[in-house]
Length: 59
Image (cartoon, rainbow, N blue to C red; front, side):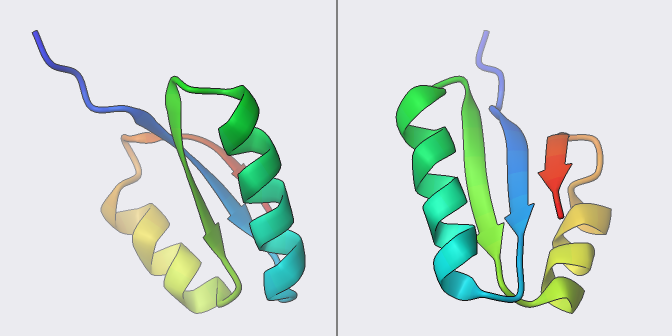
């Protein structure tokens, strides 16, 4: 049975910081998809669309 990975999202208005956190988490945790956002509106839209798949959001 195939299960989709849960999502960890990282949101920061500084794109470098959000990418840094995404890479650090992604390199150490394989069971989650890690997504970074520098646009909080786009992050909110993504969260509301995939709310059941989100495991953690770092804002």
